[in-house]
Length: 168
Image 1 (cartoon, one colour):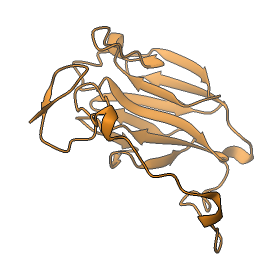
Image 2: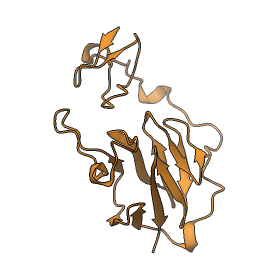
Image 3: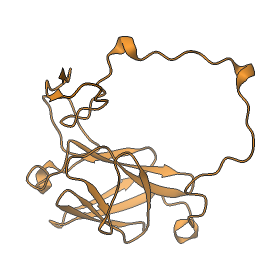
Image 4: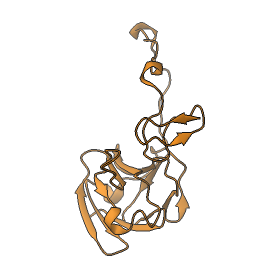
């Protein structure tokens, strides 16, 4: 068993991320990669993405997002960088951009670092950050660390906490 350096939770050998606090578990001494010379890199063919065929939301680039949490609280945020939704944990020094603690996050199974919402090209994507109780988009469960495009009117569920998404 190995111990998380941040929260001291125990995990099986070769665990990459702590389930409790989301910290990277690989020791600093083992984070090495061999440098690749620029003359060895090449680009063949066309690189495509799973998002290439997804239409642009409402024909424009959404940057302002409204979240309505199931207790009625409304949040408006400008998506100019990736944002994390989860619960604050001062002991582990974790402070997500959108803190769902006061919305019953702990009781409803929201992880400290539950999801990340980002802009990818012309789309907004949500990514589950290895949460314990899962993330759902329109009741379809996301795999951990896999991005899913979200659209205006989509329903997110983080554990048992519901959030409606709007792009005004």
